[in-house]
Length: 159
Image (cartoon, rainbow, N blue to C red; front, side, top):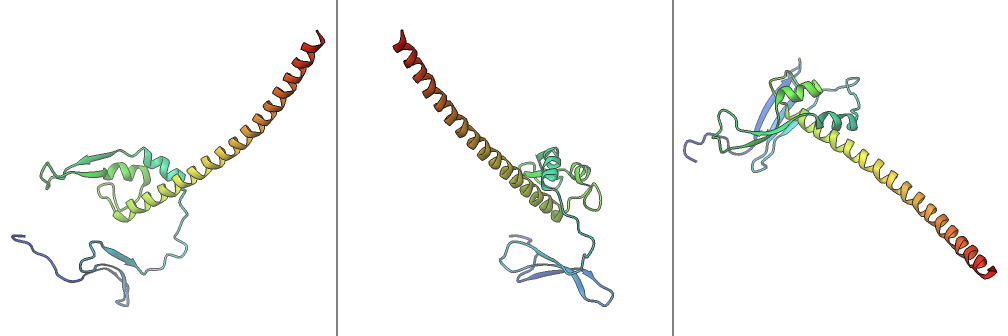
């Protein structure tokens, strides 16, 4: 590429260092990997909360998803996703309502997928229960139909 500036080989970014100078958060891109890896070594004891996937899915379903071009893109270059203020209003995650944090968007997607899976499992369980109930009712109906046919036959012979 003409005018390309970049790095060859691995690229590493130190994002956080503790008081003793030890790396606590860093990101790296291995040569030819095509994807960033970020490592957070800081302990989070007592600062974790389990997320309700179904609630996340319901809130996410209210967030508008659109396609757009950034002010730096040619108008033919399109992106897809939520707008920062909408995502912030729905979840209150990240530093502010003007930026999207990829970690938060990934977490929301994973929680929503888990919520969807939970809902699918519940629907399958309900479907199985209804199928069993239907089979029982069909057996009762078949038995009643046989009894009715026998009664009709008996009544027909007595005339």
